Structures are given as C-alpha cells and as structure tokens.
Length: 321
Image (cartoon, rainbow, N blue to C red; front, side, top):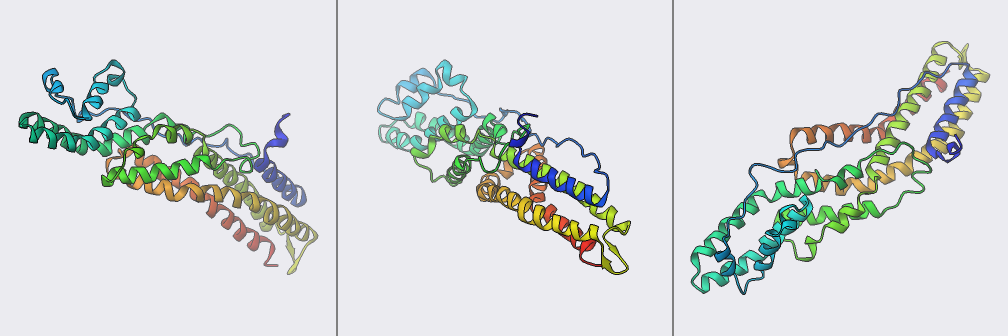
C-alpha cells in the first residue's frame, strides 16, 4: 500500500471509476485479476540440425582458411555446449567464411574436403532460419521481453526506448540473415539480445489488460445508470448526468486518454520491428508460437479498440437525452 501512489495508470483508472460509481450510485463490479500472456517455451533443438562431419585430418587440411578457427571453436567443450544464440553466431560465421575456404581448397586440389564444406554449408543454410528462430524467438531474452510485471509503477513515463531501438536493429539484422546479405559486424547479436531483456513488451501487455479491465467496469456503471434513467429524465440531462459528463471530460478525456496515448506510443515504437522480425521467421515458427502471437496481438489491439468502445458507450449514455 505504501507504493500505491506510484501506480500511475491504475490510480487514474481507479479514480475515474470511483467517481462515476459515487455519482451514479452504481456499485463497482469486481474485476478479474490481470491475465498473464506467457510467451511459450519451445524446444531449443531439432532433429534436423546439421552435424559436423570434418575429421582431424580434414581440419588440418584447412590451414590457411579463416574457417579453421570457427571449426576449432565449435569443437571445444564450450562450443559443444554453447547457447542457441552462440550456435547461431558460429553458423553465421561458418557460412560467411566457407566460400573463400572452398575456393582455396579447389585451387589447391583438395576437392574432397571442398565438397564436405559445400555439403556443410548447404545444410547450415537450409537450417539457418530455424537456428535464428531458436536463438531469438525461443530464447530466454525474448521471454524476458514479454514478461509481465506485477505492477507498472509510473509506466510509461519511466519506460526506456533502449529495448525498442535494440529490437529494431535486431529485426534488420535478421532480415539480412534471411536474405544472406549480412556482414561480420551483424553477427554480434548478443548485446542486442541482452538489451531487449527489459520487459518492454510485458509492460505493454499489462497496461493493455489493465485498461481493458478498468474501462469494462466503467462501461458497466454507465450502461446500468443509463438503463435506470439516472442520466436522462423527460428528455433532459439530470444533475447526475451533468456531473458524470464533467467526470468523463476531466478524468477520462483529459487524464486517462493522455496516459493511454503514451502507452500506445510505446506499442508504436516496437510494432514495425516486431512485425518485421516475426514475419521473417513465420514459416519456421511452430503452431504454439503462432497461437501465442495471435493472442498477444489481440490483447495489444485493445489499446486502441477499448477506449473507442468506451467513448461510444459514453455518448450513448450521456449525449442522447
């Protein structure tokens, strides 16, 4: 309770509902707890993942190729137990360095080893989008990004734009990975993943669900009072209707909608990058992830639809005497 005054959005909504309720003498219906929209945790490996097939003799034959260092790192104990994001980085580097090594081996007459590298490159390229999905959209950083906080505090005033910026940069790199146009600099994705761990998406979900629940309570008050004739009598607005109209103007239009617009701006900041990132990987996303996407996007869409529906109910209840 000592921290209640820090709950910016919740306090605005609670104040609005209480004023509508007291004025119309309509009880506030109890709202359900804010729902949790948890990102699914999927399998991080696939049976179709390509396996390394270079022997020690083959490896020694790669002397003079930058690719030799990549293969050496991959075959260390740390490489074999690397995280999905680190395995993605190794694959990207392998695919970038392999063509030059294959060309060198062909020139030196090592056609057999060159063919092995071609096969490995083809296998890793075919598996690349799955690797990207596993490393990013099935990674712990992505689940942290969508983790819903227990409270919002002074959100969105205190929200940082760093996660949104990192998400945008990450989405552009994923597009380049998918289009096979990436550079060595693009492969350093771990700082970006670390940056998106801030739960910018989870805050949005919580704010959208909080607003929807609160305005549902306000709609109940307005609809009930309207049906009981407390706002209008004999074609004229009552004192209750006049006071309620003032409450809507002062505490919804001028206060809650300003907060809601700031929240919507946070959604706008991530929407383009989010769409680009997930669209690039939709064809390898499992059904569980696609289902979660639909549920999540439906909740976020409420940031726009719920206030509009509330305005419609206000107009029907208070503007048609």
